[in-house]
Amino acid sequence: MVVAIRDHGPGIAYRSSAKGAEIVQSILSLTIKDMNLQWKIDSENIGTTVYIST
Image (cartoon, rainbow, N blue to C red; front, side, top):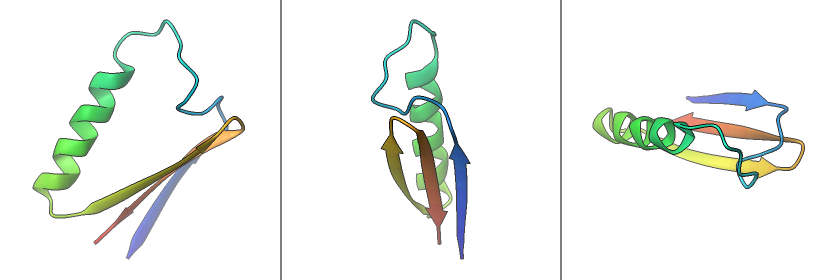
C-alpha cells in the first residue's frame, strides 16, 4: 500500500523564514521509522509529493 500526500507550494528546496519546518520533517521521519514504514519525497518548484509505503 502507498499513500501519496501532495501540495502545490514552492517545494522543499525553497527556504523560508518559517520556523519549525525542519522539526516537522524530523518528527515525521522518526514516526515513519518507528512504524516500520518507508517514505520518499519528490519536490519541485511547483510542489512536493510525499509517498509513504509499507
